[in-house]
Length: 173
Image 1 (cartoon, rainbow, N blue to C red):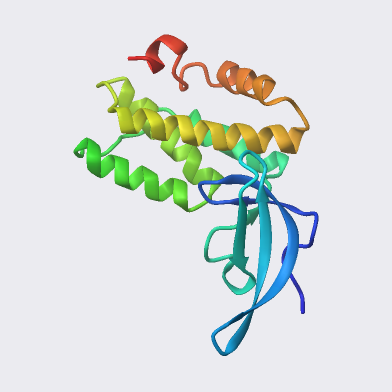
Image 2: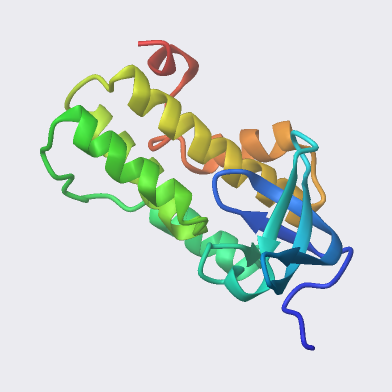
């Protein structure tokens, strides 16, 4: 059988971040057997079983390339984006769903949209947490791809996107 991921590969699992494929196991579920990727999430050391047949549909993906990183920075720094005027809880659900896709582009759109919104009104506590989560997920992945310390990547991220990312003062508002 051909697997998209091999043991030792690094992958991104939606809303959890970067993980390593530490095994491929067959498990009996009822009367059938299913094959799973066994992931170990870097940050939390959490173990996750992902059915091989559903890895693509659940959003599990390979790490970004340099071109992907450039595209993400482009999305985040887009100006003139119009954000839908919805209630904060609808926005919160929408952006939470985007984070759950596992897509780096969706994470970038969350950051872009919430920072655009921040220019016209204060963000809710939940929205602040969502933007923090999106930034953290992207920074961790970019740090791994670039083999750089996370704080250096965050500093680079903030410098490149200074007009987009909140400063420490804005983040506490």
